[in-house]
Image (cartoon, rainbow, N blue to C red; front, side, top):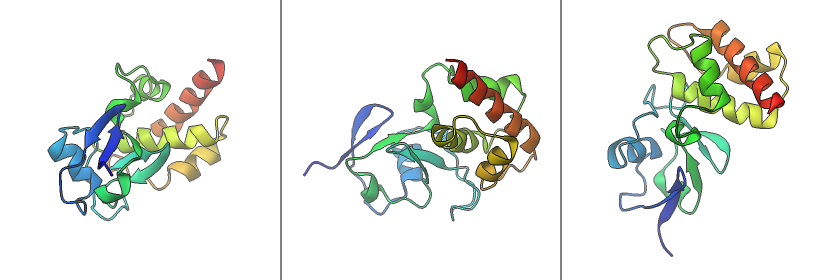
Length: 154
């Protein structure tokens, strides 16, 4: 069996120790540095990516578990930053240090795929697992709601 995975639409050979965390495979082997290391124990969610459309913590996910799967990183969400979440993030001045933002956006994308018409409390609950050291939670909530509205219009 071929040891490959699909990352952002490209078939990638896995030629590393399969116990390596996906985060380090993405960053060190593929130079996809948008996914960030935050805590290393899956608590902060800065390393969130999608596996087969579901949000996962890449710091906890061994490369062995992504063989044959479809992985999407922040770089794969849109080629030009035109995803409604990316636009809403900028429009609402969400980023400060920016460290958690890729994980926040990827978590929000997963959430909106399951709940396209959220209420404020839905967004708060869904995004509560994502830690923002700068405390931009109100702007994050507004950006998610704005993106949901844009996605509903499309």
